[in-house]
Image (cartoon, rainbow, N blue to C red; front, side, top):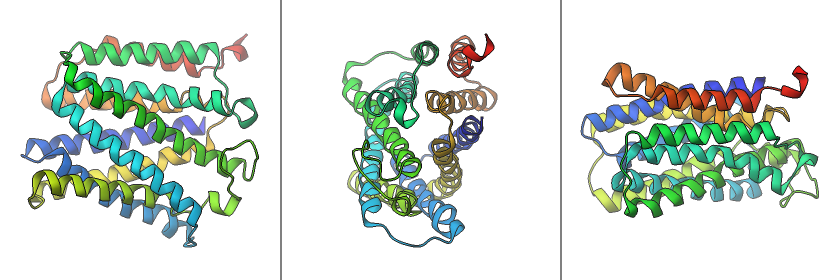
Length: 304
């Protein structure tokens, strides 16, 4: 259960990061400004938690290029998410984005299969369906659909799936170094290179900086800097636990660790939204999501 426990921790820290984004917007900031500061701080946190913590400063060109590719995906995904939030319903936008977390496991099963530790059972599929239905129920109940929003949210959805597949693929390179069945082949030292995540976030930071500079042409406000910094620390720690979860998840956990992360974020965000902002929360939809996690993660064959 280590993979699930790590994902629960990751979800808690990311939900805290989302709270600080809300606080930044409440004080007059923008998502572009917040994300630019956040991604820079996350880069620093990733350096501290990876090469500095591990005392591993060797550089790997191949993993650096892999990290740049992942960072480009993350940066464009965040830009698409921002446009989706600006042009359409936020509840439905986040529902669509979080529903994408059920897709990476399906992709990994189809591409790599059981030989690399990926299984997707009927129970995983049924649980994932409940999660998706619950997320869209929660989002749709507070939103109105706008057609011009569709291209942006669709782009964010597919790029989020691709980014999570990137993270899962790196775990395969670590657990199955040099295997011919993988599209890319890295030896153990390259696969474990500690500069991968700092490069991912620094690349996304550069993309966000260009977007912010081009769109807003102003200095970062003090409150954006403050909340972006603490939000970046929380997001960096959460991402660190997420990466550990992908590396340490068992075969049974692989199919549901990302949906578990998503539900943890949604539940905690709904909780602080209701307690601090008096937002209306569809707890029946959240219960359906939790039911999906239960159905998808319990080893039902072992209970017989």
